[in-house]
Length: 316
View 1 (cartoon, helix red, strand yellow):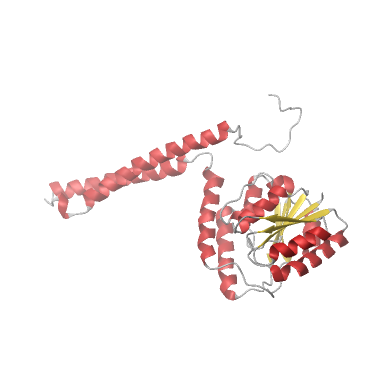
View 2 (cartoon, one colour; view 1 turned 45 degrees about the horizontal axis):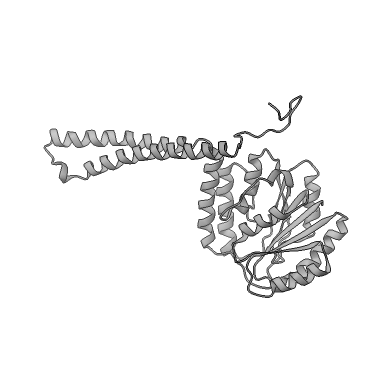
C-alpha cells in the first residue's frame, strides 16, 4: 500500500458523501495504491451508516467505529495504528481541506522530506478562530524550535517510518511534526487550499487554546527532560532552598537588631515554605528519575536513535 488517508469524523453526515467522492476521484487520478480510513469518533448522526454504505461498494474505504467520542487526537491515533501505507496523510472531514493538494504534498515528499505540513494561507475561518490560532502557532514554533506557520492544519503528509512509534495524547495531534523532528525527520511546509465550511458546525472552541498550551508544556518537557527529569525538579528545588536562606537571614536580622517579633511578619512562614518546597522538589525529581529508568529498562527502550549502521549487526 502506497497511501493511507486518515480522516476522523464526528457528526459529519452531510459531508461524508461529497468527501469520499472528491477524495477517491483525486486519488484515482494519482494512479497510486491507496486506502481511506475513516474513523467515526462516536457520531450520533448518520455518519456511521453512510460510511458503511460507501465501504461496501469500495474495499479501499475502511471504517473504524469508536465506542464513544474520544476526540480528534485519539481518533487520528487509531487511524495511524491501522494504516498500512508507506505515506500517511491525515485530513479533516468537513470539506475544508482540498484533496487536490495531496498531489502537492507527495511531490514535496519526493524532494527528500519526511514531513510536509499544509499551510492555510487564505484561511476561511472567522477571525475569532484565526487570530488565537496565529498566536498559538508562533508560541509553539518559538518553544519547540520547529517553525511552522500553521500547526493546526490537519492536512499533512508523513513517511510511515518517521511516526510509526509516536503515541499521541490530549490534543497533541497538531504536534506530530515536533515528534518527527525528534526522530531526525526533515520537515517543510507548503501552502494549501482552505474552503469555508458548508455543512455542520465547527467542533473547535476557545477552550481548546488552554489545552494546546498545556500540551505544549508537556511536549517541551518530554523533548528536553524526558530522560533527565531531575534537572527540572532539582533546579527548582535548589532555587527554593537558596531563596529560603536570605529570607531566614532577614527574619533573624529583624528579630535581633530591630527587635521585631517573628509572629509580626510572614517571613517565618515564607522561609519554611520555600525550604520545604525545595526539599520536596528534589525528592520528586528522584522519584521521576526512578520512574524514567524503570520505563526505559523494563521495556529495553534505548535513550538514543540510530540512523544507519555500517559493519555492525544487532548482536552486540
